[in-house]
Length: 459
Ligand code: CAP
Ligand code: MG
Image 1 (cartoon, rainbow, N blue to C red):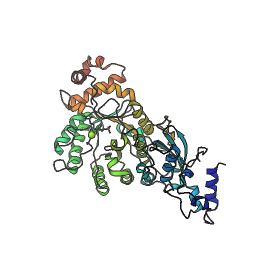
Image 2: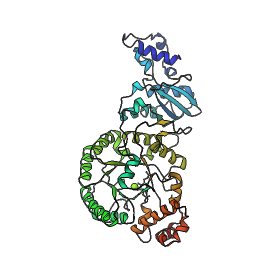
Image 3: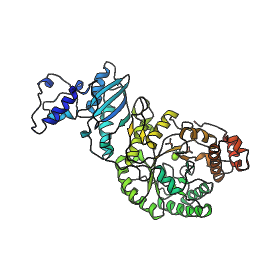
Image 4: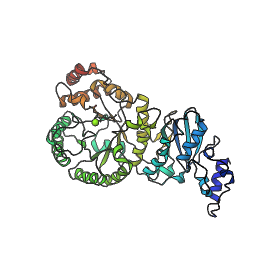
């Protein structure tokens, strides 16, 4: 057994007697960070293992920096301590694999409270970002053992459940946000929603900054959207849905969820970063009781996911969202107006969709999701019909596709813009180029969209 296992054993075996460990060795040193580094350590199957990108500050070795990362995110502090109950030795994290600027740190499962995601973040993604002992630090991913994931419920429906509910099996689910993103009255908003549904889209989504404003009160929007939805369902014979944004203080979100339920909506949209994991865990259960599933918008994520050297990856945000139980999450387009390349976008999709997420070097650790249901990636941001083949190539059919400015900006308006997007999807699934489709009788709206935007990639 290696030193760390022995150290763990000491921690466990003598815990009951509660004697003070031999601290003379420690007291001779001013700090003990080297206690948190062991390149021979092999994680236990109950350990959580975190993958970091890290850069030590000038004048500090990688081992010294790695020791600080493991120490400050588990049991340590900056100096040796006068009293150290033996239990501590069994709870220390271990930096065990330094590979260039990538680092693996193992955390004993006993450190973590089951089902408490805020605590995981305070530990793994807390003080360490502010330490002088790193110049840059980015938390890329954390592999979670079944003993940890069992504390979470995951999505209520999964992709299959949503497809069954909406009767959409052979293409992406489609939706749009009324644009301009805020400024319509509730009545105008609902009218744009009606046009979107009549153009063949499944969903109408609120924008991330629309909640309840003087000109578009939440309650009024829900009632009017319900009326327009019922009209669109009657005229099309198709089930229509909406991602109405309930983002607010937690108790207000619960009340807004109740109103959505009263008006027959089965989705709620939440801006997941700004409300925080604690509110999300509460709302996931409240909504589940109402059989309402969730659309997770990630506004503000780029404040800490974008810098490749410092912050937290979008992949780890996606992992948290699937754990908590968001049923779909924005994951990027690679070709639209927002950052995130193909490799990143597909890795986020893997975190959301796969039963066993495969590892990706220096990006993702393997993750077995067990019985936790999957979730849809949401492809949105700067899209128009001309870019649909690109995103279909990236995601395939298992995604929620949102085309917003790219339908309302169609020369013939919203309904024609939605039809043009549906025609682009048909073209891809029928093995036609967009040009070929646009030349057909049922491709006219697409032809007009291509005339305006062609294959333009917005910046
Ligand atoms: C897209 C959008 C979404 C972005 C969010 C917007 O509208 O409604 O919020 O997709 O980015 O407000 O920009 P457009 P992401 O289709 O008109 O661009 O999906 O990367 O989280
Ligand atoms: Mg938006």
